[in-house]
Length: 257
Length: 96
Image (cartoon, rainbow over the protein chains, first blue to last red):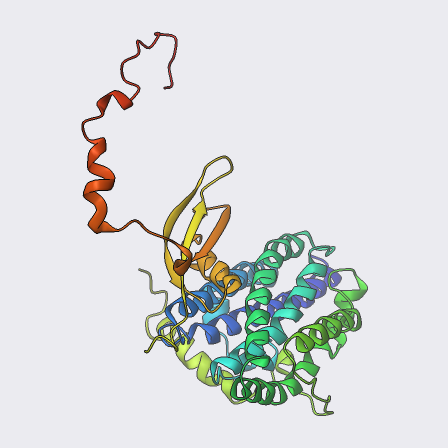
């Protein structure tokens, strides 16, 4: 492999990790609801979304392992990295909070994933395009599920409205990162692999405005401070997720059942 | 949980594939019909069981009274001539 090709594979590896880690960490986080949801039906609903996300992560991380070329499979990539090597946005590692806060997070990130996957389905990278084409159908349902709930809660009782509005205020600052274009995003967009984040932002923003209006919620103001989980700089919450998630692989390396 | 806090019950019907009837598969709780469709999708179609879902509020179903079962159903017992079993079926007819 030429130096240029090797360098490109390394960049693509990091980009695929960004997309895959988003699904992995969000799926793991959402899975915490299993056995705790407010109704049996919601328990299954949330678990189904979590499993879809883990499925997306498997495809993406397996691909990342191939791009890396160090013979690491999806399990090693998923379970045996250090915190700073996870490139998910900070939003998806935020605690579930109450059901309303989980729903707000799922709407904010689901709308992002939908806009992203719709565009990645036309990626110059065929493998990424195929994975995105599959994921886009799942994500459309995830957003239907979460935005229906957002409308029920936001436009529900005074209590439910206050709770989701406050969750929205709390989580909103983490959305800025999703659209903060860095060198990697730019490089991927330049060669047609990933969409321009400014374009994704415009589409996301319009969609979120519609969903917030349907839910009778006020759009919070943007704040200048930004998180950068997508560069490996995480909030304090990721470490706890990883401790849970990695326990088995680290205690019983290569465990099978 | 008292009735006010429990979501209403819906009956779920699934069409397994095009051309077949919707079949009753079970019931679930949901706050409204749209949520009932979502729940039905998650509960009853996750193993590719269907291509279409109907949900009906259980309260909208009028059922026969079990106490009247004798008068409703037993009179049919000795009306065997109502079954189309007295015809000679030509050998050429394979699927009847």
